[in-house]
Every structure is written in C-alpha cells, then in structure tokens.
Length: 439
Ligand code: SAH
Image 1 (cartoon, helix red, strand yellow):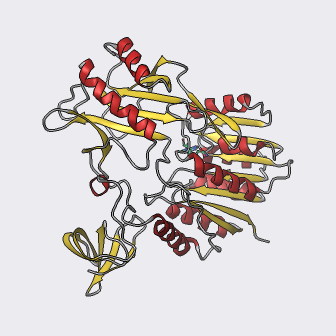
Image 2 (image 1 turned 90 degrees about the horizontal axis):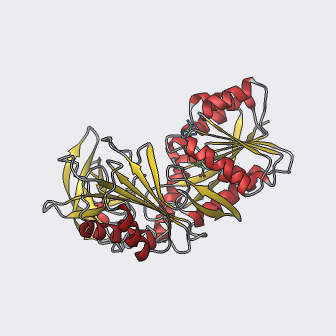
Image 3 (image 1 turned 135 degrees about the vertical axis):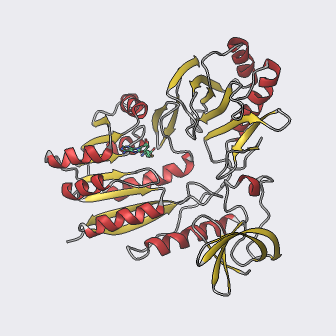
C-alpha cells in the first residue's frame, strides 16, 4: 500500500481498491507491505511488515525502542516534517474558523520533559525492570534513556533500579500482587535545578529507608526532596492519595517567565518549560490586558497563567479542581508578592455558572482544560458572562473544535490561532486561540 496521508494519531494512511488502511510506523510517501490486523466496514488497521520504497522524508528513529514503546508516534519523520504534519492537522480541523499561524517549534526538540514517570515490575526471569508502558498495554518496555525525557531524571531512575537489587527491595508484581515499588516519578525544575523523587509503593512500610536515602542522595546530590506515595489500588492512576515526605520539603520550586512556582507531587505542571514560556507569552499577549481587567484563569493548575498575567490585570481569579494545586497556587501568589490573585478549589463549570448568575462578569477568561475539553455547563455560563476576550489553550484539537463551535454559535469569533509544539516526536498538539465578541 502507498501511504498518502497521516492520521491525527500518527499512523500512515493508504488505500487499496478504495479501502482505507491505517498503518502504524508508516509515513507519508512510503510504499509498504503490511499485515491486516483488523477490518471495519470501510477501513482497517494493518501492521507494518516492510518498507518497500521509503518516503523521501523517512528517517531512521533515533530511539531503539521507538516501535515497541509507541510513545513517540512521529519518530520516523524529521522534526521539520513533524511540525508540518501538526500544522496540516490543525489547518484541516480549525482552518474554517480562522487562519492558523505557523506552529512554534523547538530549537532543540529532545530531552524536553521535566517530569519522568517510570513503571517498575519484573520480567519473565523475575529481574527488576523499569521503563515505559507500551502504548495501549500494560507491559513495561525497559528504558534507561529516553530521547524526550530529562537525562538527569532518567539517570536517577536507573540508579534506583540498581539500588533495589542491592537493598533487596522488590518491585511490585501485578500478576502475583507481591513486591513493593510500583513507580518512580522524578520532577526537575529546569531553572531552579531542584529535583523531586516520588517513590510510589503499595505500602508505607519502607524497610532500610535511611540507608536507601543516604545512598541515593550520595549518588545524586541534586535531589532536594523525596516523597513516598502510597498506591494500593489497581488501575491506571499512578499516584495514590496518601503521601509521606521522607526528605526535604515535599515539593520543588521552579521559575517561568521570571516568577517562582511551587509544585507538589500531585499538582499539574507543564512538562515542557521551554515551550511553556512561549505558550504563556502568546496567551497573555492575546488577552490584550491594560491593567484594569477582571481576569478568570479557569483550569489554573498551580496558578501559572493567572500569576504571569497578574501584573497586567486588575484582578485575577483562578479555579482548579485539584486541591493540592490550589494550595500551591495560593502560596505561589505569596512567593511572588502578587496581591491581586485569588484561587478557589472546585469544578470550573460550577464556578463559572455561579460567577455568571451572581452578575460578576470577567473581562477576560483564560481557559486551559484537560484534553477532553470543557464542559457544557462551563461553556453556557461563559457565554452568559460574555467576557470581551476568551483565550482558549488546548492540548486536545478535537475537543477544541467542538468547544469552539459552541462559542462561535454563541456569538464569538475566532480571531487568532497559534499552535505551539509542546510535545515533539509525539502526536500531541497544543494550540492557543483568541475569541472575541463578534458584533
Ligand atoms: N493552566 C494550568 C493547568 C492546565 S492542565 C497550566 O498551564 O499549568 C488542566 C488542569 O485542569 C489540571 O490542573 C486539572 O487538575 C484541572 N481540571 C480538570 N478538570 C477540571 C474541572 N472540571 N474544573 C477545574 N479544573 C479542572
């Protein structure tokens, strides 16, 4: 099959006798031999067997685990082509709303992730392994160094794995329910250099805790805090709700756009700080603040966008579901001596509804919902509150389109769209849109 296009999720798309095939790991321009895996009425999925004629833009993946892991869906394309692919995707999805500006790429698109989460388990020989869950499965692909993850974080994870052996600590085995350590999460402040290690285990009993931490901090003096997180539940969620600080403060600080932010283990913090500064700068520019506005930062995380915009606004209100993140946001305002920001824990939709029925009308709303997008309650009360400008930051192009449809039907017009590549080598696409009231 000749690959003529690529899907949003990064598969190659080709046709045989009008029947559409999705072929993972094939790129636009390839001619490939592929094995049929699954067929539906008019399309099917096939597995790449051999590249018969490579596309002019095909490159050999830099990562030896690329195909097995599946986390970097665009590894077979050079970075410039990845950017074109994302741009085309957004133009076809959002082009009818407004011109889509050229995507902001990275100068150095590797090792950009400041947060690394490794799964721990056992292989068939019952040796401890650590790495990444294979996309769509629960098997761990052993990975020591990943080209998009922070190198220091990866090094810490490898050393922890080696230490488990010498300390006779067992990794958790999902099949038998035995063992202790399930995940290791490392977060590093790229600006501050501070490093947080979160050990996710099934029980709070940590034998040899003292000598373990001593050894770990000898190997990695850059570690500033270690937290034990207890997760004894089955399921896909990495972090449990109980935590014990074993070393340091239990959080790290980092800076973005000259402000300092505290980040707790369970708070959301953008994983690509270099691109986050570009993302926030353009979002704040779009907001067109003059110093008087009442601004709402919806889905605010640890308050980063609202606090970065506060200097140009009259007052900023932030709302966020995660209580840990809200606590961080309140402290972050203090840390930066910002006195015109208030943060509330709760559902953004409910908050927006209360705000609009209470007659409190924001002039500008930043909204940065999770990938699934915003809620009907949020959108309908946003329309009722009728701010002059809405700046929508999205990591889910499909939900963005759905929500933009609602806002445009409600009397707004999309006047700018700026994609920012937050996740090079993967199929994830981030963009910022400005909506203004159409007269
Ligand atoms: N603006 C922040 C966070 C964006 S991520 C930043 O740039 O860092 C999206 C955030 O929305 C997460 O912190 C998540 O906890 C929060 N969230 C998810 N559902 C929510 C809801 N219904 N109401 C409010 N916040 C929600």
